[in-house]
Image (cartoon, rainbow, N blue to C red; front, side):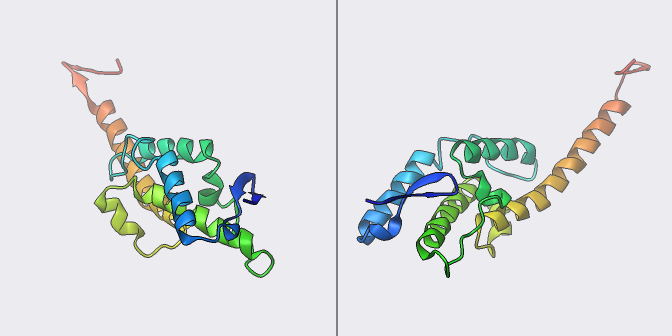
Length: 155
């Protein structure tokens, strides 16, 4: 097998794996290794964006895959390096699969039309970070208004 470094990731050059079955086995083992079940405990809902976000950033960074969602690992041009382009697309789909498997149905429905992990990530951030900020402000306001007897809880 030929190894190639792509944006800091030492990856098997998938074009050298001639059999579809071997390629499928390789990516299935990656999914099992990265764990679409065991690496996170919180699935994204409308009420837990900050927890989910923190958890996924950590997972993606430790696997050296965060660049796919933040844009720092850009897609190589198919015209200049078709092999690198194809590897990038396959890793991006792996990241997208990890993201999608960490969502409840409500969140999953927002991602239907997106084709890259970066687009999914940005859509989820835009949608749920606003809701989290609103909840945070409401909770702070409620805490400031709480009283114990005639005193505020901050007195």
